[in-house]
Length: 153
Length: 239
Image (cartoon, rainbow over all chains, first blue to last red; front, side):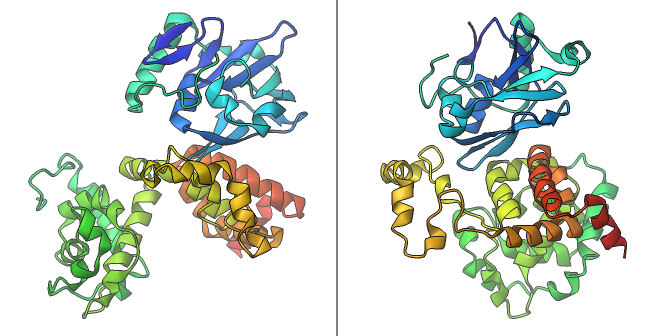
């Protein structure tokens, strides 16, 4: 797992830097989507996560979930248009999972993309992800990642 | 030239500063908030922010009265966010209202999406979201240890048992943790119509595209549920 300023970035995932989300492509063509370690650090202690309903069609660049911490609220944006085929009810019940395990237990929605190839150009991985997030953090003046609930992957 | 030696916005063209200055003076409220300042300092003496920050409501009255466009622009990007909007300064013997001058200036800063305004409001995104989606500002569950370290260890106890604490409050409408009190659907519907018709929702888009996206979805969902077409709102406004 790559590390940047105490932020964990698993090598196996794809990232959309501007949306601050990770994507995992599944064998059946669906995509799992969640917040990065950087995103959870920016939010602080997360108290609510409300994924959109299963069956809902979302456009690219739109929100698939709303995340709230003490004083912050923001959307989790998808780089892909498609139908939400599953939503993680565990994070709805205990949103601190997103702080603790943003990449494993903290997946937020599963999407059946309308056209993966059309929107995949903005995704990065490996060294490109590291340099992309390095610039993103510098631009937004973000300090090191914090694991307020520990880090379980 | 600004009165500040360390003026940060000297490179911004004067015409741009003048445009925003004029926008403040063209506001409908302007004529009832500024009558001329004789610099007695009563507003500063009454101002709680002046005690804790390098902030003075009198400077706003003076700078606007003197039409010091350069210093206005410095204030617009910095000191304007130090005011707590308590309006203690309205005890001015000339009936100036520096707090209201600041209200107008903040609106101009927001309408123009100034990066200083975005930065100042960044920490308050959930408060903006709560006010605009529910009409209540402070949610009990904002009491989180990482946001209120100054409250000491008690805040963790409160946040861990928030539901119990809230149920101890006598009115049932306050047995809430995500909202200050229960808000009826009718109230929220009226609120959303007001935000849409007054253009307040668009104001938010200039400041935080993320909150705008969430609010628009929440509002449209409820409006549609009640049979209101979003396009109809524009027709109502035109009428």
